[in-house]
Image (spheres, rainbow, N blue to C red):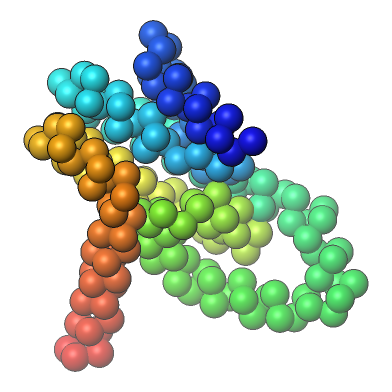
Length: 193
């Protein structure tokens, strides 16, 4: 099934309606779809490098709006499904402690996982389930998803096809290292100053 979804996504990237498809894939990936929008973004930018920034913008907007949808899934379905299960198993108090900790670091969590290969949908739904401030969630989402898609577009714009293998194989790791270093820098500044 995953292979069919991947093949469909690649075909959609080459279709005349690629831009609406990119938006759609970016939207649904943020809440339930297993294929990341990079699979469409990469061939689209390689095909029309002059539109790299527009494609990154479309992916960012679709992803953030899809993230809001994922947030709403977590927010509304948690009360209907998740909370009764926690109460049944006696974990309501533990979840509340988790939610408080999540919300203390929510902006960093959303930002960090928004640029990594970790499934963003997990973060969007968890943010809704813990009732993370929606404005904090959206700001962190815009920054992280924009960074992710604009860096991919920039690398493809400047380096073209040779960078494709690097992006497909290692960019998630590079983003993770970048965010860990950035976060580590803020922590170091907080405790050293």
